[in-house]
Length: 108
Image (cartoon, rainbow, N blue to C red; front, side, top):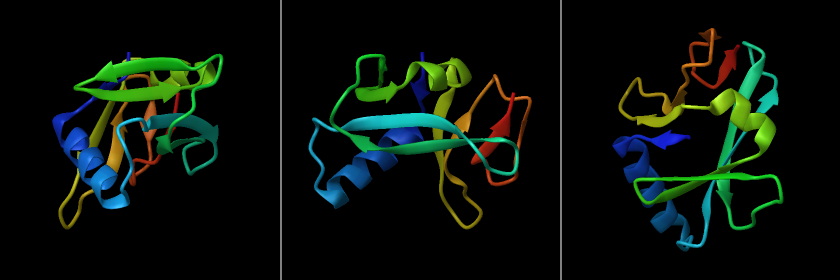
């Protein structure tokens, strides 16, 4: 399962409204090689699922990821931190052995 914190849900709803994106779009999350810790998170709105996608829903928000990325994201929570020193969107990932300062990169 991949979870969504209340703060992230609120921000997703706000972004969806600002961009004029309908409820048929979901959050697609993936993990790719790169970043200062070795692996990076990618996130965007999407409206098409692929055959091997893993689909989750939490707090009324649908999150979709490919199987390979799910192995890194299992039991993670998508969070949002605003404010002057906020990180924006980031994952609270229990599988990460270390993360970079910006929260966009991690290692297992």
